[in-house]
Image 1: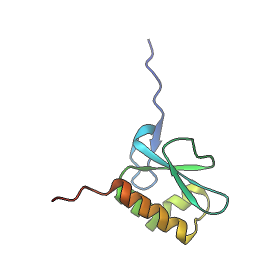
Image 2: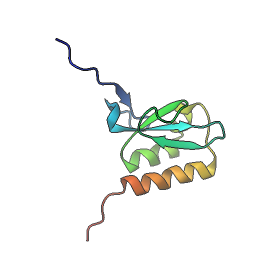
Image 3: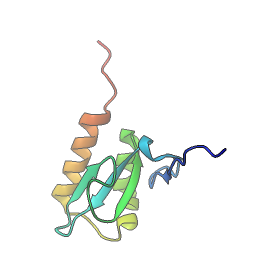
Image 4: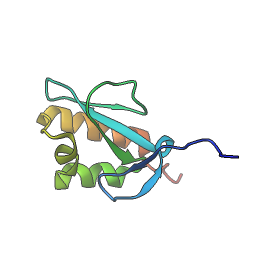
Length: 95
């Protein structure tokens, strides 16, 4: 008997492969804004990033996110995406 199919995705920053649920899907909207979602809930062409802040920083630095999405995002949109990633994936501070 066959098991359930698990969709695999690749991070555009570190090239790690894994199940789709382990990644964040980023899309570029028509107005050059990036939108982050975890699935196909946000329409448009998508690229996947690991749930690590380092991958978001690398993808924006090297331009691999824009290359995958076949277009660049606005400066504000890039800053907003990085700020979102910092709040979502920042390591807990040691108190």
